[in-house]
Image (cartoon, rainbow, N blue to C red; front, side, top):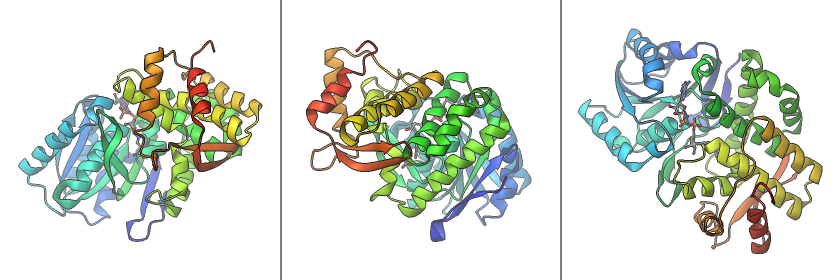
Length: 365
Ligand code: NAD
Ligand code: GLY
């Protein structure tokens, strides 16, 4: 498969998608004129499976890699683990020319990318995403960061990777729930940018759920192309890039009020995208039939589309939304769909409508 190129001038890079690029990381890094010392940051689930091949490939190419293992899961994306990584980078004497390899899902990619953005005022990094969500979204585009107890991704930076290696073989060990969570970001691209792609997802869902490599490779590539087109036009989210946040205002708030423990990111944004579709129907006239197609596709992926909240939790959810990074002048700004494949960003929503949609997140309402 041809690499997808992210066109960002001096910060341009390639995304390689296929079966096996993980074991070629050393050769690929050799082409980038990086220093010899490097750190592979991975988590406790991924490191035992994939780090031996990655370390071997790096050593065979003449690099000196050090493995840093962090805990797995969303709660690991925190400043405490950033500090732990800095300490290990310093003890291994990584230098300005050294680089970091992020081997894992979006948590490792965001955390290791943030460490790379800030250690010694910035070192190079390579993304090796091992989840579907990370291959189609988080490894591309240079948003890196960690959570605060107050909210998701509240500390971060833009720091583009030098290379992204998406190995489709990694899906062979990915737990079912994690795989399905990744589909939430895949579907997002159809809603925000590419109606024919949404139709393809409706048609090929069976193949995707059976993890047929050919279909998955094409889907990962299309998602990376879309993300690349968006980021290529608006790297630092002064406008267009906001469309990638469709469903994330409610989704991030749900993650925050459940202390990042109940919902996977993909699950939270599946609920959030259904809420955003309902807001879109009320505000921009998205047809009710399309709202239902969106809900149904998430449901067929085995993703949640509703959530039972107590009145106190609803209040907390609305408060958490106000901490979202998209708030400006105290007003929450949403990405809303006019039709499948076309969205508008920066949309204010009347408080009464937002409250009503939050009330209707409950399964029986
Ligand atoms: P994750 O990184 O927590 O990975 C999911 C789980 O699967 C973890 O337990 C991990 O150890 C395990 N795992 C990963 N790959 C595996 C494999 N191949 N085999 C077996 N186990 C494997 O979660 P995620 O869904 O990849 O990423 C979610 C994070 O990504 C969130 O923090 C979200 O905010 C972030 N994100 C960032 C961006 C961005 O632009 N930076 C975009 C979307 C999401
Ligand atoms: N996932 C949102 C972004 O990369 O902008």
